[in-house]
Image (tube, rainbow, N blue to C red; front, side, top):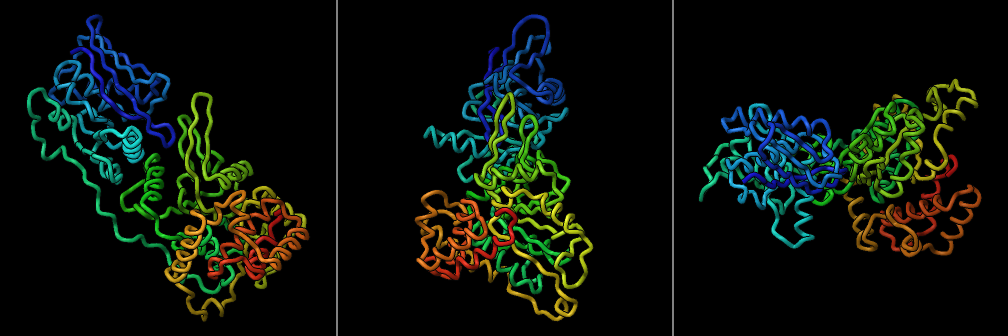
Length: 513
């Protein structure tokens, strides 16, 4: 048979779209042509596949005109993930393996010159796509063949049927012509879902002494899914607080863990030890807008997507480039980021919790009782003015973190543990999920009015505060959602004056909010 079809997947954002690898052998001048909008690393598969087939003792049809088409032709293809599928297509077209046995399988893997299979990025995204396609079509789930280094990751999808292989020959033995495939006990095996690791461990908030106001703000942010900005002098504990925030969040569900792991897999940053651990991404303040939101060609996820279902910590917030900070405005509202290019468009999830930290002035000691600030009013205004009003308007909580004196730091006993606070957070989140099916931060439109009902005194207080502080409509809604979270932590069914008053104080210092 001179024509063969082998199935694989191409990644476009978090989507893993089906690709049919068509291989045709014909008489004529010997050549190896690869078509189908392939990037440079895909075109280089010609040399890898040729060497891998020859070095494994198989016959490469070098006297034939070989044409490989990656369909659909308008879908961009990148990386070496198609090497295995191309090699199997050539072997099937030349009759060295049975093309009929390839039906029901999908393949991905990069080949070394000696035929070894190397891991590929995005294996988990491919496995999720295979499972979703089968569910929508209500058909049989295709079997996915991957290098051993990627198979365990892909097997995290409960419904997936994953096979891992070490070498090209291990795969070839399963599809030889005849009634039965040859055994390959050491190099080919079905990969079963791994046993989840023990409960993830995080840094304990008990390590932070004092800072009652900041700890309370962290608890509210965790319970409602709100964003948080901490302002304080250098060394006051802002970074310590932020690094322990993920430990206050509820345990990840299986779906959340799969979403987070799939994004990390696209960048090759996922390991099995990270399964179920909420990510905390802390990019340096020199990061560009592309590094934060993603980009490139083909598009790759940025830090906000890698922090999906976790925490994005931006330290020294005013020092970030203005363009990078302004790019966060839409994802903070929508929970997704869409990257559009002339040739294609990709969408990545970005439902993260923003925790930011900054100094009150360039020297860092404005308002400090320990040291005198040496900044002029113009310098302070210019420094704080680096943060735009629209961005600050999207940050729900603002809290000042005061520096502790030496005796307070030494003599203050440890505070509440993360486990104790997390128990209250889980209870508050459960109330919100039972009531509205989402966290309080995710409330929109009429749902805000329905779920954040105020008693007359609370409504009067909020109207007065919003008028005097000049809040926008978004600011009022965000204050309402924070008040709803505070009421949930208190176990109250209705939002009362005390809850609104506490929510208002977390927005009073916001410039332009």
